[in-house]
Image 1: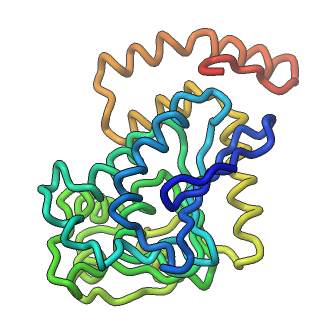
Image 2 (image 1 turned 180 degrees about the vertical axis):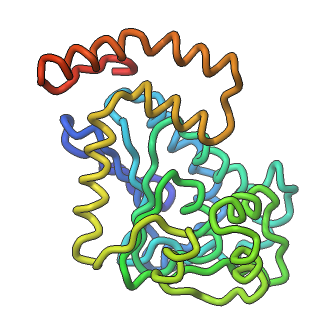
Length: 254
C-alpha cells in the first residue's frame, strides 16, 4: 500500500493482477485538490507499464467516491484552457490508460467525480450512490471533452438535464440513462467489482488492449491490422486450450 498526494494505491494478490487506486481524502468527501489532479497522470503511468497490473479499480475512501473538485481551489483548476486544464489532463490520462479501469462507486459521485467515473471503462455503483454534474451551480463551463463523453454515454437529452439542473440523481436513474453500468446492494458491490476484474485479468490482454483502443476510436485501419497480426500466437493458444479443454495460457504483455 502506497500513499501519494491524496491517493492510496493497493496491489492485490500477485495471481489476481488487480490494482486499486483509492481517492483518499475522506475529510473533504474526497474532493480533488489541484495537486491531486496534477498527480494523477504520474500515478497512472507506471501502472500502465507494469505487466503485473492487468486491471485497475478506481474508488473512494470512507463511503464516498468523489464529491468533485475542491471548490477552494476552483480558480486554479478553471483558469487554463480545455486542452491544458488540470482536470482535463487527468481525465485524458485515465481514458488513455491501456488496461481496463472499473469505477467502484459509493456515496457521492459529483462534478469532477463524474468526470473521473466517465473516464473509466465501466462504472458499477452501490444502490445508495448519488450522481450530479454541477457546473451550473458555480457558473463554470463544463470541459468540451467531458461534455462530449457525457453525451456519448447518456445521450443529448439526459446530458442537458444533468447540466441544466445540476440536480443529483439516484443510482436507479443513473442506471436507466446509462451513466452507470450496474447497480448493486452496497454489501455486494466490492465482490462483483473484484470478481469482474479477476475475470478480465484472466482473459487475453491483447484482446482487451485492442478492444479498448478500437472502441474508444483510437485505432485506424493500420492499427487494426497490426493488432490482428499480433494476435496470431494468442489465437493459436486460445484454440489449443479450447480443444484440450484447459484454461488458456495467454502470454502477450505478460
